[in-house]
Image 1 (cartoon, protein in one colour):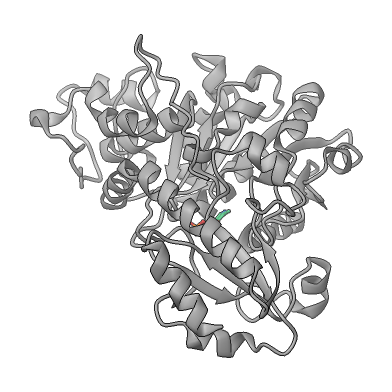
Image 2 (cartoon, rainbow, N blue to C red):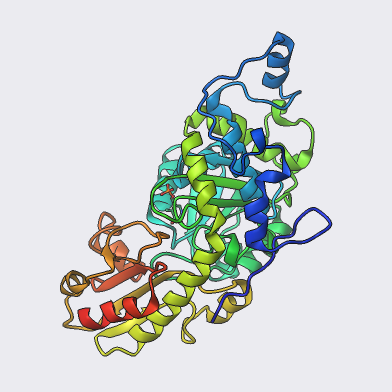
Length: 420
Ligand SMILES: *Cc1c(COP(=O)(O)O)cnc(C)c1O
């Protein structure tokens, strides 16, 4: 299946496609010297002729930059690009995806609040939320494939629901629509980590999401050479009703209060600022997101088909497969089925032997690289949590996860063939 590409809803009179919009996004504002890329501004501080202007920038009364931790023109251009991709109203970037998640929730939650999260979270996010428990935030982990389990956990102090689109490594697809409706009705802040689908396959704003998280490190950067993270406000949350916005951030457009607080406090308190060099590399990567995703999703579909019919493979986890429990949901919501594909090897097939036989596919963690990567899940990224927790999450010792890249399909299939 080739992805159905959803156009970006441009705010101008002419709607343009996804890739066109990203490519020409920077030029919507004046760029120094007509440069076609937003230049890399490697300056920590920004000087002003008049002290009054410096004061006005500090007080948020004038647009501008004061100190590099709180913002930089190169990073701002990337933020605008992500806002456009997600049909949002504003974006704040961070040094990594984890920094974006951590700073956003540190800024918006307080001790005594309750957070509902998916039980199939990315391992480091799972670890972070357990750390929040040490600081007095209650956290419930629920099966996010069903809205009912989320609804039954709602308490009087629940503030936030946090889910991912496609889970890693077993590829469960959250009930993104149902949970969005529930959060809208209950007045809860709905945060979706859209890393695995990217705005090319899915825009969480379409199901009522309030904040969209990305690890830019993965598909948006796309080349496995730079770290970054972001949070985008879709403009759908009523921040005036949220109890934890500090008075100093209740300024201007109510739609933007939450992210203003994340920018001011989140960047200041965490100090996890994205560098201008990284922002430039991520912006260059973003230009080809659509092309890379389309190709990698096709490769993943072909690999899932091949592996599913091989006698040495007992199970395939890929939302594009007819037998996947959330296949219909994924077909309805996403333009294609993503590039994460996991398998369980048949009894008696040694996963290390299989991996070591691979010639082309790289044995590596990370995902969303142009190169196809494979990792033995139980022995690496899920090792620390121990055998019991792994069993409860359905992670067997013979599970191998692939992050499928953009190589030529025949080469990938040939590599699997000879390794199996
Ligand atoms: C990688 C990842 C993160 C964390 O991003 P980093 O940039 O590595 O800090 C968060 N969520 C998901 C779904 C990820 O895959």
